[in-house]
Image (cartoon, rainbow, N blue to C red; front, top):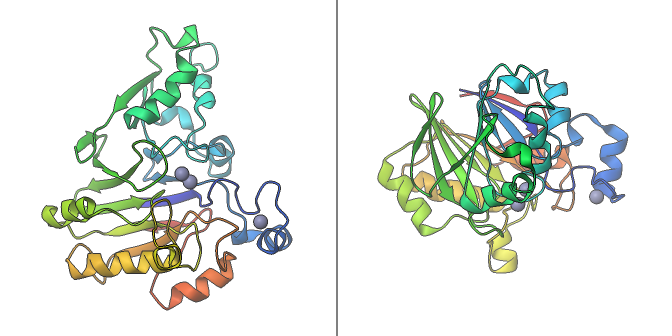
Length: 283
Ligand SMILES: [Zn+2]
Ligand SMILES: [Zn+2]
Ligand SMILES: [Zn+2]
C-alpha cells in the first residue's frame, strides 16, 4: 500500500493564510517542507481521504487526474477537510468525459448532510450519476474498491466525526485525524479484531505537546506526546509492534515547536516520522 501525503496542515495551513507568527514567517522564508497545505492523502492511486480547499492545487502539484477517482472518504465536515461547493464541478455541464463515470463519497450522516446543503439547492444534482453519497455507520466495515474500510468514531467537535481503518490484503493503515485521544470502545474494537497495524497517521495539531496532561482532556486534537501515549497503549495490547510505521500529521502553526525541523528533532526520540507535503510511504 502506498500512502502519498498531499497536504499536512490543520485549517489555516502553514504559514497560516493571514498569520505572521514566528513559525509562519520562517515557513515563508525557508519554504520547502515548512510549507503545509490543508490535510489530504491518497492511497495507492485510487482512494482519496478528505476533500479540502487545496484539492484542486494538489491534483496539479501531484499530477493526478481526478476524473479517474471512484472513491473519496471524508472524515468530518470541517472546512479544511471538506470543500463541498467544489463537488458541483463534477456534474454534467462542468465536466466532460470523466474516466470514471461515478465518484462515490463516503462519510457519516452529518458529513453528507453538509454536502446536501449545497446539492439540495442545485437542480443539477437531481437524477445524476456523477456522484453518489454513501452513509457509513461506525464500526461497520465496507468493501470499497480494493479495500476494506471501517469508520471509527473520532473525538472531535462535529456530530459524528470518523477516523478510518483502511485494510488491503495484509496491510492496514489507521488514519487518525482529526481526533483527540481515542475512546475505550475504539481501543476495544482494535484489540478484539486482533489486528497488528502496518501504519498510523496521527493528529498532531498541538505540536510537541501532551494535550491531555496540559488541559485535563484531549477531546478535539492531540500533540506528539499524546500520540506517543496512544502508541504505547496500542503496543501493550498488541495492536502495534516495532514494525508499525508512525507518522505525525495535521500540524497547526500554533502548535508547540510547530516548525518542521523542530518537530523532527522531537520525533527522533520516539521513532516517529514528521509528515510533509509530498511525503510518500510504502507499507
Ligand atoms: Zn483538520
Ligand atoms: Zn502563524
Ligand atoms: Zn476538524
